Image (cartoon, rainbow, N blue to C red; front, side, top):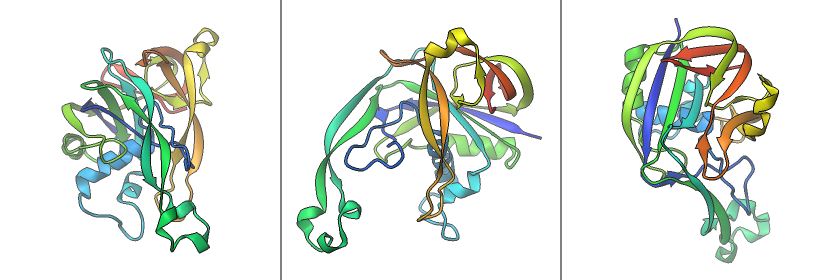
Length: 239
């Protein structure tokens, strides 16, 4: 049996999650991707643990389905600040001994929404409802370590598999068919899948994000899904 946990997270200021392969410029995703949500959930179980068998603790949650949206009364904005970052890894080997090349100025993206809320959904058959609830209440941050959150509510229940036409505000794989009139409401992003082992790059998968760009706000679209789940009166689309 598959269960879901719907976790409502209040942002202290916002969050920052760098897009794949960011280096000299570090734009942020507009919503925390599935890998970030799984990392946030794993922190509740592996607090203070850096690796498990040479892999990120989030690897235990690799098969968990994760989705996110802004809450209905939340608006946000996107900004980029100039930040002093470590760039040592991007330097040629002969430069790495020289501290002059260890740091540089990097434009860093962030989503600003003080006291705004993210609604995240996790679907899995790997954990019980009680385990999902406990882990949901233990989430502390999203993305960078400064992206602190407060858990406002955790709802758990049975995830009911469905297919066909559903309406959703959560992001979903871009391979899912969307009603043509709703296409302009989508923003596309390439999220990581996997890559929880050091030195191994994750697979990039294109997602569709139902989003009003400014002010940033989650909106509803209709999807002709091959597989979806009903989670507490809402739908998340898998394919």
